[in-house]
Image (tube, one colour):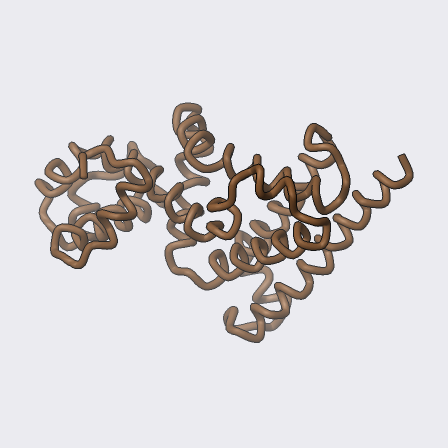
Amino acid sequence: MSNHPTPDELREALAADNPSAKTKRDLIEAALYHFGHEGYAGTSTRSIAQTAKTNIASIAYHFDGKAGLKRACVNFIAMALGDVLSVIMEKKLADIEHLSPEDARDKIMEMIDRMITFTQTNQRAELVIGFMLKEVLHSPEEIETLYHLIFEPLMDRVTVLFSRATGQPVSSDELKLAIFAMIGQLLYIRLARPLVLKRMNWQSVGPEELEQIKSVLHRSINALLDDLSKGQKDA
């Protein structure tokens, strides 16, 4: 693996069962944590190395320094989201375009369930979300990188899924905004977790709470799809 791996190269390198792969995993997770809490400029390589329980030199050895480690973090996010959403990312657009409305809706719900499970139960989700909010969304360069690595191919597929499920054209602005509305619901219920837990009198999000969240979001997004479908029929 080069010191500037692609998401696919990074996935392969981190999956290996050896000390080098463990060090890379630990450094990336430590960097995601510190960059997400203190920002890139406010984070020292020493603090990253201490959290990762390794020496500072390993950052230069594996990633060509702090900047290279940050690039690896962006690629790690693309890799993680690609894995979570493999249910559609591994499909060609041409295959999605031939799905029936019922099958397209089923795929949307499967995608939603995977995203809810990841954001609510995976410890890495907090690292990914924190890093994106603190660093990526305030950096035009990193937005551009992440957009081309994962967001553009993902949204192309989701847009076709929504189009197949509703009959709306893929070029429809209403359709595109509806997809963002769906994403917003998924993210808010995770970002506002302390408020959600307090209001619901939950101590944590376990299997039962997870199913309640999925059930409510299914109803909401099915209603959104029904409304889009109705609008197309009335046109």
